[in-house]
Length: 254
Ligand code: PGA
Image (cartoon, rainbow, N blue to C red; front, top):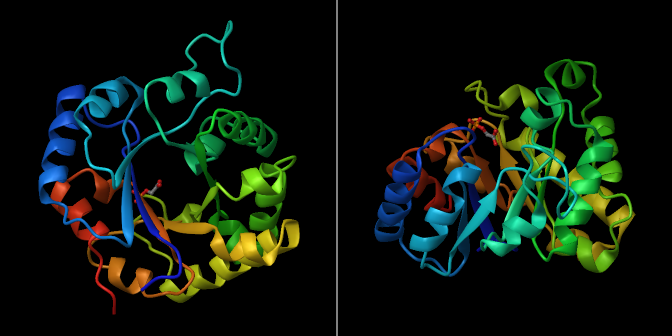
């Protein structure tokens, strides 16, 4: 039994029409066995959030968004606010995903504003951190991850921080088929827990859920979840098919 309740999140990125999203969720709710010790989150594109919410009835499956703006409303063409996400029944918001950081040039400062705004609306941020390949090769993994955590959590008080989920996603493992070896992920997860203990305290560090993301598949999920400090997963490509996602949520304890 894991020390923390497992969360397996599906990050659909820019995939699925409303109909495809709804059909997926209906099928998932039928197929996924209920387990006391784990829950799932689906983050469809913004266009499918309402429709997915309307068919979602299981208490162990939550709705998440993939991004948001930091203001509640205003002249921000093309943006969606945390208030709007709370209004349609989202529970989680993925923030600081490496695609947002690297393709859309989001800085830690921007990510931090979003984390604060999301918390203010009672939503749970899934704060993503992770090093690029060249940073890993230069031995900078821990520095990069620590920096992203410190900046991303700037101004977040202990009580609010206790609601946050962290996702460690080494950039070199996202969508590349190159998964971090379980012990490589575990090592960074422990490090993240230590940084949280430094920023807050041991109790918060040991209760925070830290997910791993980057080429998670049915074939590697069991060994990843066997690591003590991996409390769940953030899944991209392998979350687009119901059977594959179901198998990942139903990982087997080794
Ligand atoms: P992947 O994506 O599972 O396709 O590597 C993970 C993510 O980007 O969150």
